[in-house]
Image 1: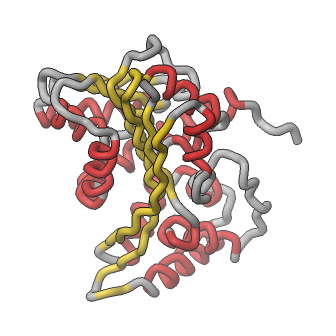
Image 2 (image 1 turned 90 degrees about the vertical axis):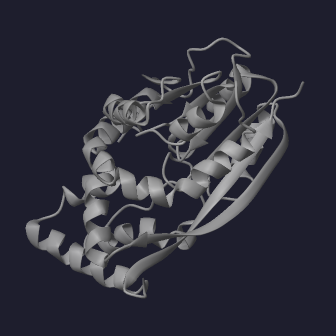
Image 3 (image 1 turned 90 degrees about the horizontal axis):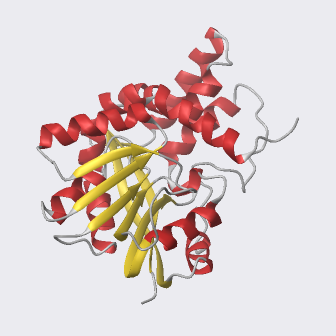
Length: 285
């Protein structure tokens, strides 16, 4: 079978993210609260301050773009981009509720940014770049639109064994049906998990002062059932696989996931470790 090309991959991802947009908005508050530390870290690594013109890539339902808009204040502006218009519709509703008039959202492909060179004072990106079929091209585009002396800050997932809340469901499905071995170079959650990988792409794009740090934290759910429910409503790749199972197989997978998640019980809650790679770089003056 022929492998999909870049445009086909992007279109498939767009459909997937639009399909789960309602789930992401449903679980929005819990995720935003738990990811607050990461949003603030990105804002700090990108050196955001009042008056800046900022680009956020892969904004999804709004973060860190919304936090960035608060930091740059009314004298600044944030533009958020994402493939999925339904995710961005949720981001726009949040911006309205927060009274943020200095942030706007538009659909687009990160590997072909519709902006002039040297247009932005900073670029942020949370859990976006690893899904791109052409990462070097995206890194070059980021470098192109950054003003000289300005910073990009990006978060991508670290190794799967350090993020059991992500890999646990796939492991359960593999126990029920046979799945092909994943291509480590294909777009996916852990595509940029190796130390130095995204940093290398940034350096190849001409960025300097590049840093790459693994950031450890925790991810909490009230119960294993809550974890399972949220997973089925927001994880497009898991949805795609579950759709291929019989009802009996789905129940088998559910019980395996619940049992595996319960191994992370602490003080009556499910507490997963998580590990994120924080990568930043500056465009030379």
